[in-house]
Amino acid sequence: MPPIRLIYFGTGDFAVPPLRALVDAPELFDVAAVVSQPDRPAGRNGKEKPSPVSAFARERGLKLLQPETLKDEAVAAELTEFGADVFVLASYGQIVPQALLDIPKRGALNLHGSLLPKYRGASPIQTAILENEGATVTLMIMDDKVDHGPTLSNLVVEIDPDDDYPSLTDKLAEAAAQLIAEDLPKFVSGELKPHNQDHEAATFTRILKKEDGRIDWQNEGAERIERKVRAYTPWPGTFTTFKRKNGDLDVKVLWVETLGRPERDMKPGLVIKSDDGYPIVVAERGAVKLLEVQPVGKRPMAGDAFLRGYPDILA
Image (cartoon, rainbow, N blue to C red):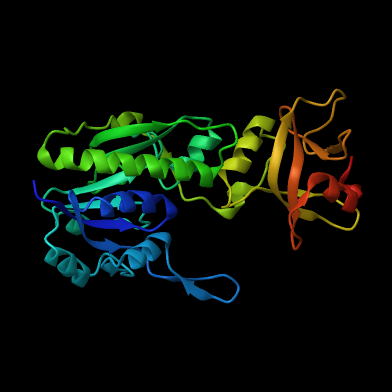
């Protein structure tokens, strides 16, 4: 069988290992072009920064397209010219119109970071950590709805107790690379058969907003807060506000440890001091020891140093 001619759509870190796996097997795959989000301003100086996929494509000398929108008819015309057998998508960041999905001879495949139909949508990896679920990458056929099409195969990844969003994304990306390299030829040859999803069992995730990272001491237990810190690293981050005599203090919470509830009855949100000098915050169930924090406008610091600088947050 001649190499499978494909166009790869991807933007984020998750999408780099699968693309690398395809490019590194030229006897099996012909990556005709890569489509990624345009370079965006980043950092304090506002200098344009390429996406991880764009940077990789340029490094490897691949044909790179960066349209602002996929709805432009000129984009469809250009993609048609490549004569691709299949499109492969991973962490692209835009909805692909049906007119584009109809271009490749064998359709379009997507690598999604969950065991579909569970956790469709924009934040499956963060949600898996937050809900203490297993992590899976699924290879699926795309249709005109989000993460809705038939599935082809999947690969399970174990979540370690200290995995955060970046580390689990790395694991899932490597699993996705293995999955696409092994199963894309099987799909094109007809060996791999699609299976319709159970749409009634579908659950959905959404684009995370900054306010999602606020810790709700009144209604969230210690274990969930600990998972939230890991799930929402680096975006949207987790944060809280402490009451002080001189006004509220906003603090990013970077690393925590779960504890049992303090012996004496205390309301959620109150802060006490541990024997080794770290702040402990009472949660709805249990308590959380703040190991590393970052007051707004300051550098990250250990919890004991933070408490020495702001002792008036104590109950």
